[in-house]
Image 1 (cartoon, rainbow, N blue to C red):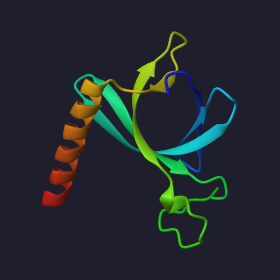
Image 2: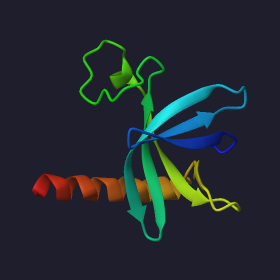
Image 3: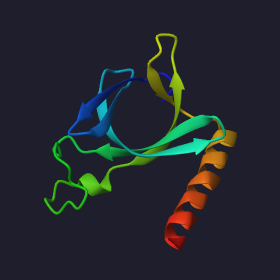
Length: 110
């Protein structure tokens, strides 16, 4: 993921991240959740199917968007002052996983 370029577009107030791989293939992800860990931010990115251009959070259209992948990305600010999504280290990933579990436990307790 570190070699991939990304671009962020705002589509109907939903943050969509466009990741481009080395071959120029574009992959679309929805920023589902921001997880703060210390002074850093991480995003839970959920894949969006190419056929699924609208909000299909409760999708029954048969497009398969609910089967898309999800991953954690570290949000960093580049030299131009723009946010980029990069792959976290193993240690960062473990910290994010603990923070995510704590967020889900707190949400379940409400």
